[in-house]
Length: 102
Image 1 (cartoon, rainbow, N blue to C red):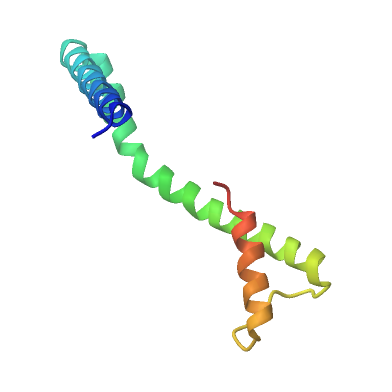
Image 2: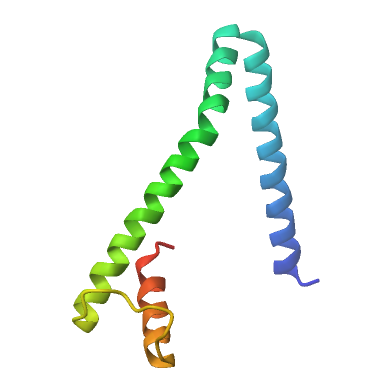
């Protein structure tokens, strides 16, 4: 392993140790403070329904953005159906990929 590889592994290990230490401190603080424990419990309870809701909303927004971009790019009012050619399919995939963040 080269010197930069060893340095990268050492940096990753140090970061992991830092994350573990942070988790331990938060867990210890939660055990000492009952109010904080209640806040953590509420956050855990709300995480799944809120993430599901925002995931669905994100999908709906992405669909609307895709349809608007498609309309501007092709002039058609509707996005293509399953009976399209390769050119249209690749164009649709490129437009949809461009509309996703990341």
